[in-house]
Length: 427
Image (cartoon, rainbow, N blue to C red; front, side, top):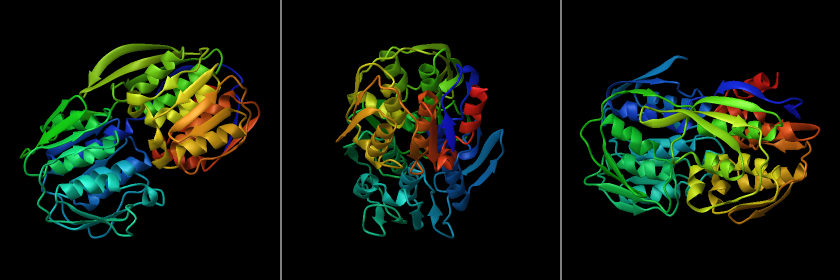
């Protein structure tokens, strides 16, 4: 797919798809609840559809329309044995979270996904789940999928000090904790996104948070509820960047989730000098939401690291592109987690930005970017990573000449309408 430099300012109003993390959890927790859960603004991306498919195979009735999703839950012990292996597609969230749930079931299950999932690290959940008494193993012995989970294990609560700040790891353990004897708690080095804690509490679970520690006490029943999914700030990030980098632009992005465990990009670009106004703040389904007014801005480099990293880990490729257009040096550190996403995002971002003329170097846990050098078009291999494809499609709007993105259709994983939105703004 070919992209050109924007020939005029970007102006208009847009909405972005429902939050991917929240959409996954709405289906999972609705399946474990008694009664019906109704979800509006659900993300119909490939990853979330993988979650729906897995729970249908586990015996849950799910009615899916463009307007809403209805999940007819059967309670914590209402899932049934699938007739075949569960396919989680490209979704690390599905794979890791559903593992915690399946460890508490009475039946055996095998999980697998695409080539990317088969290379992503699963020991980070296998170790704590095994400490809880679960029987979970990597069939190829490489601590990756496919995973075999043997049912009937008697789980017990643990306190787990997680070496990484990962909502997927934390959530997997907390979900297993629903089936464990006694309390289960997870302490992280920094607080990761807390959608699991907020939503489980809404369903009736006994979950509490103390600093970077989350604690769950088993409850006999979750109860179905209505969930309105806010717009995904990770999807909004691309148009935040577009509005900031294309001269004369002004964009209003409606109904974006601004959960403090996810809003790191807003804090970083404001530190870079961005003109962003937060409007119409509200609470929807326990999650803070707002409209974002974004205007073209002259940006400068910043240092990004420490506790803020888990709040913007998915946005770092887009931030790196933006930093190339800012004056001065930007340093991204403490972001080694980028190496184990759908691609090694440190190497892919650095190599492709170099091809576009950027002055950028990789480090062990991030990158150093010397901004202010004009970008030019290049051929970009997405590595079938949706974050890479979208980041460089937006970067192309500020690059001279043509940019070709290979494997551009991978955006369907999280934002099926992405290119339609780009075309709308470029008219």
